[in-house]
Each structure stands twice: as structure tokens, then as C-alpha cells.
Amino acid sequence: MKKIVLNSIIIITTSVALMILVFFTDGAQNMISMIVRTEHKWMVAAFSCTFLYWVFGSFTVGMLKRGIIGKKNDPGQNFKTVMVGIFFSSVTPFATGGQPAQIYMLKRMGVDSGTGTSIIVLKSVFYQFVMMLICLGVYIANRQFLIMNIPQFNILFAIGYVANALLLSLYAFFLFNPKAAEKAVWYFLKVMHFFKVVKNPEEKMEAMHGSLGRFKSGIRILNKKKLYIAGAFLMQVLQLVFLFCVPVFMMKAIEGSFTSVFGGVFDIITCTAMVTMIASLVPTPGTSGGAEGLSLLFIAPFFYNSPKMSIVLVWRLLTYYSNIVVGGIFCLLIKEKPLESSEAGENLGDVKIN
Image (cartoon, rainbow, N blue to C red; front, side):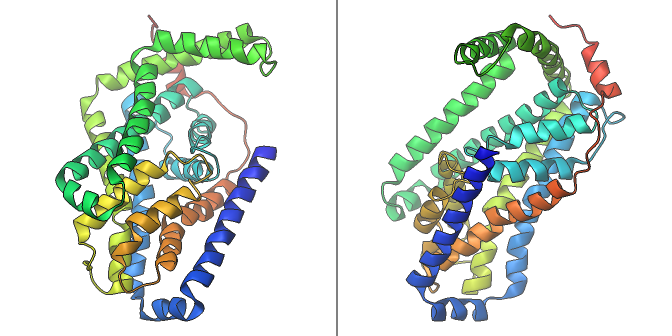
């Protein structure tokens, strides 16, 4: 509860600070002028990109889930699962609350925790891998533009890419070396026991062993279904592409064109991809503070005739605060009910673990 309160205070403080900065930096008259000239149909298109980001995220989860437990055993409700995860990712540092929330949602629907973990960890791997692949691709294709227009870009890119590569390596370690991962969990429990955070680590490990076994089974099952892997990969690419397109339609709505003095469509997509990757390192809930600063540096310059801080606020409203509002609604709609074991989970539990 204390963590939730602290994270909420951080989010509210950052939000208020951003609005104060917008008001005093850009001025009320400039803000009103920007709102008046905005073409609302294109702003709706920008929000539609955020909506499609949510939708294709649910498609990715659905592909992975069906690949592991089968279409017959799939309880559905992928969109609800993703939105609850997005909400908790938005209100916790490093988005650490999103994965446990989604695993919990899957368990509520009858998918056991081991299988649910394999689905959500794989979703995170796909997200991380595709984001890094896209960022590397646009960096190679548009490197000259980035170096010429973004101060100290190479340093920012190197820090962001290396840090994300290390995170991806950690996922790979967990996926491809499950025995070592199990040992890592055991040592972690021992350390937590030493600091009196966890009691009876042996019992905790014994309880976790079954879930780890089903986790490994889920990975093995999906590995034999290449079509589902390809489908999940494609859905993940589309999810991130729609997220990166939000400022493109913002520019059309506010500036009246898809191009500006600063650059065109591919340039703004490139910069948005870089902001997303680098901002993920900021340890505040929703990368608050860091995302605003990076978007002021990477995205706002495209809006040549508009107040820059107002642009940052609009972008955050579309890509961050909407996650909290819509995701929060889905969280409020969750009805309490006992957790149950599904036939899918039981079937996975029967697979022999080596």
C-alpha cells in the first residue's frame, strides 16, 4: 500500500509539474491558439494509434496463449489482461507491476501460474526484441539525421541500447537455461531469507518448482508451433509501429501537415522509437520526468509552429495518461472470484519435466 501511495504521489507531482511548466513556458494564449487550430479528426487518428497499440498487444498475448494451451483451452479476455497489465506498468517503477498483474489475470481465468508466466515472459521478450530490432534498423537507416539534429545522440543511443540488451539477455537466460534460472530463484530466496524478507525458503521453492516445470513445458510446446511464433512476432511489430505513429498524426492535427521544417514521417517515427527505448531506463512510474525531457528533445522540434511543452503534454496524454485512465477502468471492472485450475493448466502439468 505504501508503494502504491508513493508511486501515485510521483505520478501526480510529475503531472502537475508538467502542466505548470506548460502554462508558464508556453502561455495561455499560445495554448488556446494551438487548440483552436487543431484538426480534431486527426487527433482522433492519433488516439486510434494508441488504441491499436493496446489491441495488437492483446493479439500478441492471444497468439502466445493459443500456441501454448491450444485454441480449445483458451479462456480469451486478452484485451482485459493487457489493459490491466498496462495500468500496473504505468504506475510502477520500471513497469515492474505489469507482468505480475497479467499473470494474476490469466490465473483468474484458469491458466496456472507456470503457464501464465511463460506466456507473459515470452510477450516481454518479443516486445524487448522487436523494439531493439526496430531501433537498430531506424538507426542504421536514419543515423545521419539523428546525429545532426539530436545533441549527444550517439551517447544516448549507446546507453539505451546496451541497457536494453542486458535486459533481453536476462530474459534469454531465464528462457533458454531454466535449470540455471531455478538456481537463481533459489539463491534469491536464500538472500531474502537472510534479510528476513522471506520465511521458509525451502517451502517457497517447493511450491515454485511445479510452476517452473510448467513454465518449461510451455516454452517447449510453443517452440514446436512456428506459425504461432511468427504470428506473435508480427503482432508485436504492428503494436510498436502504431505506438511510434502517434506523433505523426499529432503533427497532421496540430501543424496541418505530415512533414515539417525539422523532418518528415520517417524521421518522427525514428525519434519516437528512440524515446521509447531510452526512456524505458528511467526508474520512475511511467518513466515520468525522463519521457517528458526526451520527448522535448526528440519529438517537440517537429512541431515548428507550436508551443513545445504543450506538444509534450499532448503526447503524454495520448501515450501515457490514457493508459492509466483506460487501464484503471478495466481494473475497477474486475470482479472478485476464487482462483481455479484450468484443464489447460492441468494438461501442461502432466507433461514430463526433464
